[in-house]
Length: 129
Image (cartoon, rainbow, N blue to C red):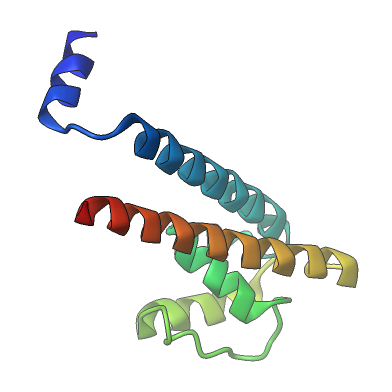
């Protein structure tokens, strides 16, 4: 308890922004976790290759259904990471996705990306104040 009080004294924040930020972060983490679970059935190797939630969602959005087609992911991943993802996609042991499942995953990707961008914007706005 004492450490928590000391931390609040060192880093003062307004209660409202703290609750707002945590709600945004909590929803984004929940969505990212669900996305990783759902897409993990299709491409489980990706979970170890891309650990950042935002980059994971962008990668899933770019890949769609894992296939033998090489996808250029260098717009948001390093060349090494992009190559590793493409190599893993070719040999992945994940299950195939039905069209309805892929549509749901793509919708969730869009939601997670939007939430994470909003959280980042809110955080930068609170840092400016």
